[in-house]
Image 1 (cartoon, rainbow, N blue to C red):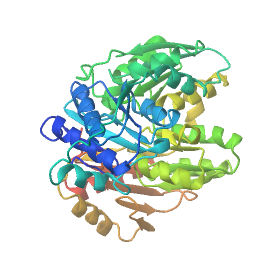
Image 2: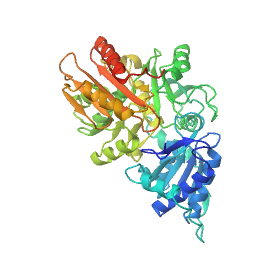
Image 3: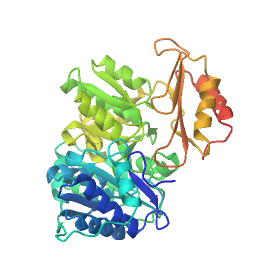
Image 4: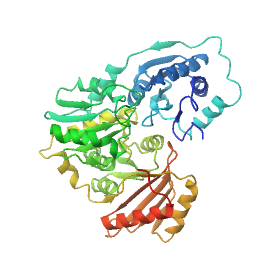
Length: 453
């Protein structure tokens, strides 16, 4: 399986990605863009320094200058590309994947993502076919630049707290342990206690994937034990944030998108809000009720960002915990969404659990994963089994819908292949819990394999 994915590069070290391939990737990336300077950052994984240096050497071989920002979350790298007016850049990271993975997230100017649709396939060919080109006579230069304080000031601009709020968060030993304390230093009105804020690329406490409910257990207990108003969990490269309310409940990210969309639409009447097709139907309902334009898109940061630019959308959100902001170069940022939630909480006399209860009116499985080799065959079986559905679309995988949100008894399911892992993913929702549970079991029986625990 290729390490060049739909919207990034990702594979295991050193069998799939080593320093030799990393140098070729750097050279291919520089040759593809043809201009500089290029920002390069890295996460805290054990092999990241080696891969980071190799990528930089490849870029320098092409005669392109590098702005080396060193240890960096992915949102910090996006910021650096925009703030430093670079021609593009990358962060060396494997996001939420396990400790043996490494990879790269690639951007053009203004943090515009490079995906399979606009460059990754070309970079793959350049990096994997034929001999690596010889370094040009005038190699580029490497400048080391510290952007952390500027980044923290940029993020802190989104804070508008009307009182002190009590927050606990879990950095999962990932890059939030690098950036979030710098942001907090700018914001004395946040009372914060943290879990696992030591950078450690071996992830000794739990996976850095807050979509897995098992990784939230420590945070949920910590929220309740500390009497905190809110809990936040970051992923490995800190471009995602998931939430736990004051009662210790894990909250769906589509619910948070709906909550913040209402606030955004008060300041941007009639604006478009972009969301991915796995999101609860409460989200487009909420956007319409607030006078906005719901814009549904396939899963993946490059696709949502392109849709946001097309519609000049001020905000977008994914079920996976990515939240996007027009005033942040349309890029995702875990700390900005957290500050926006804290702003809302600081203005309310209700606990966070009460603020979201009205939006948690439907019943969803959340994302359920299956190890299935023949993903196309599995999706074809779903399509055939529900051929009598009111609607079937293939924007991303297969989405089957029965009924409509204005009439009781509706349900829908989306089944799609992951772009980052060898998995088939399912999301199913209904206005009736019994129907949701019944249809979930039916879909599982059609797929013919038990879900991943």
